[in-house]
Length: 500
Image 1 (tube, helix red, strand yellow):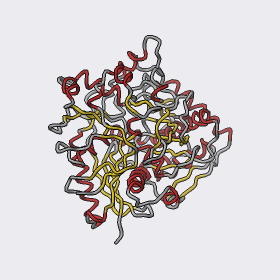
Image 2: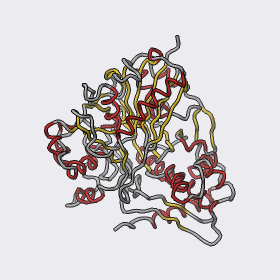
Image 3: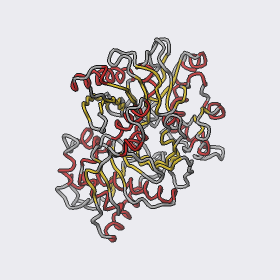
């Protein structure tokens, strides 16, 4: 009888369950969006209980669609939106507050406070690989402890527990209030700014600085091992055997197992990761040093990462806030009604700017407008913003790593946009490679789980599954590329320092 691996992909806008076969092909998929909550400008929240209900629903739907019995599923892996922070009561299972999403800006004052007194943004970079920013979980957790009545007291007693969304999903899957496992993997732990990259453990001095009680933190485990089994009726008894933050999962799904191999995921934001092997490589160009993955009984692999906050989310903004398009896929058609951007540039600094600039005071701008510009030019500028931001990250990464990228492996929802992918190749001046399987985030989680239970024997089994669907080659002259990038640099500098 054939057997399969299930992956739960708990993302920023939706939760999915995708079931894969041994060749890494999709057998069944189910997806459900959850509500985006904006209580104040710059604040972004999710309802953790809604996400948990959706998780159960998509697992059940994926099984129904694929006509799959519990016995058909050999293991389940989990991948998740990283940094999104949730605290809940281990006795009742109830969250104390909505999950604070990675895009949320409410900790901007804390970033300034922690950076003061000559410390600067890199105060914790030596230990964590991360600059001080609103992005990471540690400051979000501190905000919750400081602002939610009774939470700190419950945390010190051990009743209140913390996790990114992987931890919350695993805890509920494995029993919840009836002995649910409170754990995370090294990739998610590396995004909290509370784990020491050198020891792979929670760091006492960091916990002291952030005033976080150790009792509320999950156990840190490798990304691929059998942690326990599902107790929920949707997959009873199935091993939970893999956890990876979404961007690390995409790196694994793209089979970037050799130092120097890199991928870019085009989703709500853009996330470019380069495997640096077992060497912890520090960045001097505004990138993050992070954990790539750790397979069972093997050394940890590290990565350099460039994170861009707003890419696909800008297309959604054009759809939902301005109504220029009716559905996200309409943007390519609209952008193709014009030959170029008409001189317009869109800097989507809605949540400040991430790598390589790290400007929390930046805000979104549209620059270079004339009476000539129409909605087709705006649509094109929206797509081009993703490509320009990616080039900025690639150049920083090449400088940090001391190597030039020969090609860029890409995945995520936006890679179906051939106009964007061709423009990306043009301004990058290098090949952009789309794999046959673009659902690499969920596939990476499946690979981690499958390796742990012996469904796949080794990394060579996984490499054999990878194949190319499209390669985009650059088709732009140097003078045009230089002119466009110069315009982008002017535009992005105009966005700096907007917020007082």
